[in-house]
Length: 504
Image (cartoon, rainbow, N blue to C red):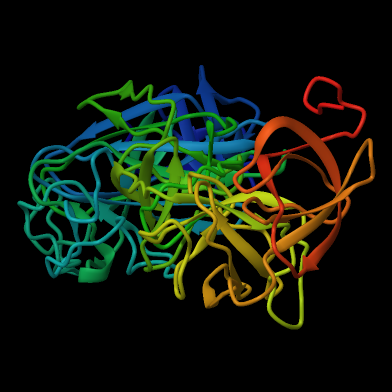
């Protein structure tokens, strides 16, 4: 590892100098090697300084891992080349088993310091006061300060402002020394970085230390440089991290967000997540889950720019029959969704409406309700299918209802949310149809034991109860009065020319 030293050069500045010396009389050549000043790196070879290079050429390539173990403390700075591709830059950190360290990434002038970990269910990470947090750094957003992650065993929440530092000696409260990554290692700069760690900066594990995950979105090809700072103010620290190059996050398809764990068969939303990792040294072992797990960050975009449900209100999305709870952008629970059993019934068409009682017969559809009876009653909810999918638009629907078996016909009024407001018995109204035989044009009156509409062709038998051949007739009146002299034979409608189902 390099060290800070005092050197002299001939020339107006370091970039234009030809040789480095160790004395002011320029008589003692500095040793061959690499030297840096003010963001410029130059190699001295055989007493001659070679061409200057910007420290930008010293950037560490993404996909790399770095580990540090020192007996002192430090504030570590490094630049990464994150390539010209787009996607999510995923960073993984392991801070050892006993001392927490802080991390802060800066890309395109935006700071990033929120982290999660495998199994993070909103209870295993705590801030400095011991309060459980959904992710590390939740109280530290927008500050530009590092978020301290790792183990909870060391009390790092103190000022580190003592600048009377003895070289080679580290005491609690000493200001850490600045280090810059150059030439394949962190190089001490000989300057100090006083700082104070607060409760809000912490998001440490209650026991031990997992591998922590951070996501930095990169939605444009440039810039290609990302800066990472690791704050290790406590003496005798260790940390290891790796920076992955930008990639599209894995996706999954689910329902939209909802406030409960009820099953939802409509699952057509695409979201994204980042996998966590395990291990104590680089390269870490990345998880291979194809669906989000507890502790994963989830996003609405492939680059990880927008966290899903970045609020403190717990919401759920449904994948198959599993309800995943997400809050503050983190999956914190996974449980079986709650399935309801819905009762089926017939109703007039969803487009049917009436200003009065809906006791006239129209075309029918099959619907479901969450009540316990054959037909819905007031305050029951009506659904589109047996899985409980909501009907798209009710528009204060009114319609006849009829169970799948039986002849009780009622009128119901439903509000825009699918909730039944009023149910009225239709038996006091006329409950007969007049039909006209398809062949003879003879009229017959039948009780409306099944729901049909005007001009439907229905099967009937003469008499009450009906006997003999099954004929077909066209309904010519749905609000008739009179005594039935024929009986409907089935709930199906056919055509007058149907010789299979209609006798002549």
